[in-house]
Length: 478
Ligand SMILES: [Fe+2]
Ligand SMILES: [Fe+2]
View 1: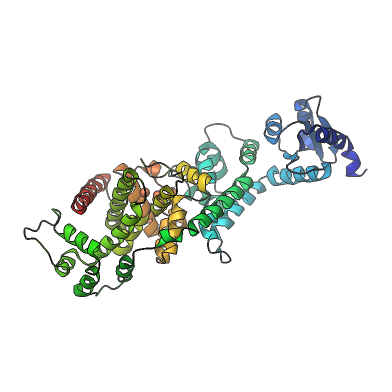
View 2: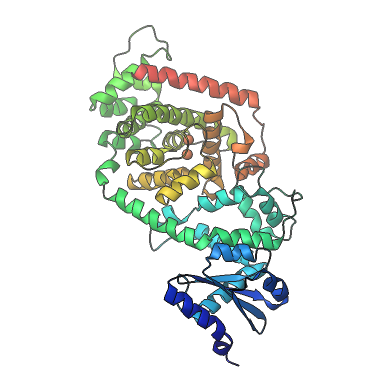
C-alpha cells in the first residue's frame, strides 16, 4: 500500500482541523514503543501504523502538549500549520525530526553545528563574526542543567563534547555521577523542547538589526583625533618625551588632565609641576597613552546616565590596572595592551546603555544568564558589541579579539590576554577570585601554567590597593 493510503485517516482529520482553523500535531514514534504510545493517546486522536513507525495525529494540539503526552518516548513531532500544510509534508518532517533526535548522533549533530559556528572564519561577511561566534542562550541553558550536562559529558567516550565544558563556569559538567536518574530520552526531550534552531535564527536576525542600527549612527564611532594620534604612538618604545609633550600640548583638555594627574596626591610631589614634558617624563609614555585613551572613553561615557557612567568608569579603570598587574603572572607582558583591553572590556555596555538596550547586571561579573539576556534583547552581548566598535575604530585585532572573548577566554586567539582580563574582571567585582564566577577554561589554563601561584590574600590585597589608586586618580581628575 502507498504511504498516502496509509496516511488517509490522518488526512481526513487534518481536513477537519483545516476547516475549523485549529492545529494538529503529527507524531512519529518507533513501532517498538507503539503499545505504550497507544496507551497515551486520547480517543479523539487518530493513529496509523506505517512499517517501522506508529503515526499519531493529535487533534487541536501544539508541539509542547504533544511532547508532554509522549514524554518518555522517542518521537518526532511536526505541527500543522507551521511545519507543513499537508499530511505528507507533516509526516516526513516529523520522521526527519525523529531521526535527528532518535539516537546518540543527534547530540553529535547539535555539537557539530555549534562547533561550526565557532570555528568558521566568516570570510564572506566580516560582520557575521560578531553575530555568529557565540550563543550565550544555549550556554546558559546548559549551565542551568548541570545534571544533564554531567550525563552528557561523563566518561571518556565522548571526547568531542568536552570542549562544551570550557564554555561554562568552573565546576559545571565535571565528571561524576548524576545525582538524579537521567535517561537519554529525558535529555532528548529537554533539548527538543529548547528549539535550538529557532532561537539561533532569531538571535541572528536581531544581531544583524542591532549592527545595522549602530552602523547608521557612525558619528558615535569616532575617537577624538588627538587620542588617535597618541594611541598610534603606543608601539614606539623609544618615543622622546618632547615629541609626546608636543602632541599633548595641542589639546587643552589632555594637557590639563596630564598636569592634574601628575600633581595629584598619588605622585606626592611637593613642587607644582607645570611643564608637560616634565610630566611625561615622570608619568612615562605608557601612563600618558593610558590617559589619552581614558579621555577618549570618558567622552563616550558622557552620553549615558551619570550614575552608570561613574560605576562603569571606575570599574573599567580598576580592570585596566588589575590586568596590567596580573598579565605578567599569567604569561602576557604587553602592558600597554593589557591596559587598553582592560579599560575597554565593557565598551559594549556603554554603547548598549547609550542606545537604550538592556544590559546584564552591574553588581557582579556578567553571568551566562546576563549575557543571554543581552543576546535575547539585541542578538549579541556587550562582548561582541565592544569588539564591533573597536573594529570600527580600527584598533588592532588583538584588542578586538580581547574584548570579544573576555567572558569566554577559550575562544580567544591569545588565551593569556583573555584569561587575564577575565580574571581581572572577576577580581574587580568580587575583591577576590570566586571560582564559581570564573570560566572553566580559564581555571584549566591557570592550572596548566607553571609558575608561582598567587594566593587569595595577595589577590584581595592588590585588588584593594588598585581600587584605592583608581579612586585617587579619579579625585585628581575632578
Ligand atoms: Fe563584560
Ligand atoms: Fe566588566
